[in-house]
Image (cartoon, rainbow, N blue to C red; front, side):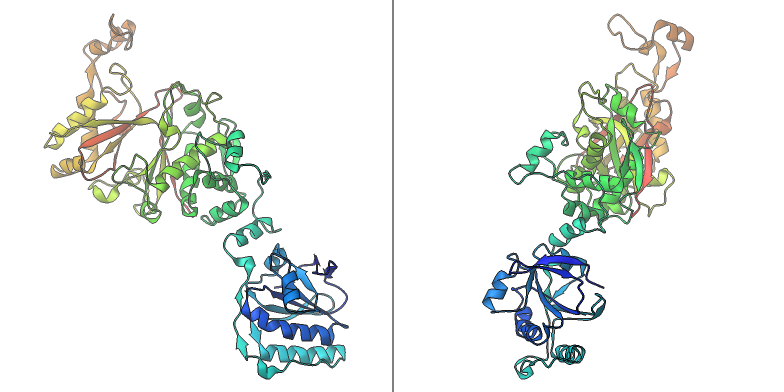
Amino acid sequence: MSVPSFSLRDSEGEDRTFPGERPALLCFVHRDCPTCLLSLPVIEAAHVGFGSRMDVWVIAQDQDGGAKLREEHTLSVPVLDDSELEISFASEIETVPTVIEFGPGGEENRRFVGFSATDWKRLFSDAAAATQLEAEEPDWSTFPELRPGCGSRSVEPGIVERLQARSEGSPLRARRIEVGSSVDPFEFMFEQGLCDGLPVVPPTPERVLRMLEGSRRDPQEVIAEVAPNYAPLTVEKVAINAVMAGCRPEYLPVVLAGVEAICAPEFNLHGVLATTFFATPVLLVNGPVRQRIGMNSGINCLGQGNRANSTIGRAVQLIVRNVGGGRPGGVDRATLGQPGKLSMCFAEHEERSNWEPFHVERGFAAEASTVTAYAGGAPTGFMDQRARDARTLATSYGLSLAAVSHPKQYSLGEILVVVPPEHVDTFARDGWTKAQVREQIQSASERPVRELARDPQCAEGLPEAVVRRLGADRCIPKFRSADDIALVVAGGEAGKFGAYFQGWIGSGGSAMTTREIGE
């Protein structure tokens, strides 16, 4: 540890520069610390005795620059103003008083923390030998042998992050915008177009640094290019938007994985944004991280009230807006849009199901934590409160899903179906697997081509030429493949109500994408 070079103004208005040509004794204090006040007479004695040959300075962390300290204790020793705490922070001062002795070239010889009569006696003896001066020592009998110090102001919560952000070693590189003290930061963020229609948390350097503590990744690592502008996205920029969304630092790895998932080529974020359909990133979280960060997979899991669910999804959406440039009326061309464009993120209720978790189906270990991104519409509910066996219940699912998008639109792609605990129990009693439920959905929802043809009452459906080519009696399932039906378990214990997120049916298409959550 060492003290950096500096120039500070003392309480007399004189600038003091370190290192100088003389030896120096720097004493870091603040006036609210009793041990610092105990040490002041000793520091004063050192200045009186050796000040003609060495610099003896008090470096005060007080807001008034140490003026009151000097006045109240009748000090002649120079008191330097470190109220900004930058020198204390750079010198790694964790406790005051801290006393550091330097040679004439600025090399550190020793430091001690708190009050130690033994250390002070040794320092007086060595200084006398080095300066050839005989200083009058304090009456050591009036001082305790040892007394612990107090916490340095430079390590107080809120202050240390500010100092880290301003230091030369700060990991932050994003452009900073200075906002005047008279400007409302919340209104400023709205005016700059950085909000999603709701207020955001101003991403101060201190908050961003705290957010970055949630991940071990290099803040300047580029993790993706975000459509539609394909702008490079660093971990730091993810952290900035996570702050704005209201995330806690422990959510950051989930946000990082979520962004990586939606920026994967197979997800086709540009197409998801440009479509006039309802599609938007829907995030599903699996694995131990759900419980570690307090995500909701139970009652009201698709609704409001859970900070992790709400802010993780919101952070991803803000990144699409603020980094990628995907804003409504620009590339985002949704005709109506939907509330999920603010945030849609939930966790699977793995413990409530006899089925294997969704991420295990997709090839990940059960102990892994993952985020799956899906281009979905708003959740649509359906119900079956009477089915008592698995086949009947799965048939209800198929009949409900037959109306997805339009009753005459068939051979659809992926769909995400949320199965509530009470329905899971019905499937479990009959020992039905997910594969059996999917096949029954396909069977119950299939229709002959003749019923899907356009007619005078409904222009939607298959044109006559396609009907002739396929054959009027041929049956077509609602979904291209049973594997396109994703079944996940979530929701409260009471209520036989399921839901589905309709998939994007655009010609470009989007595929579910899963990424493992790292540290």
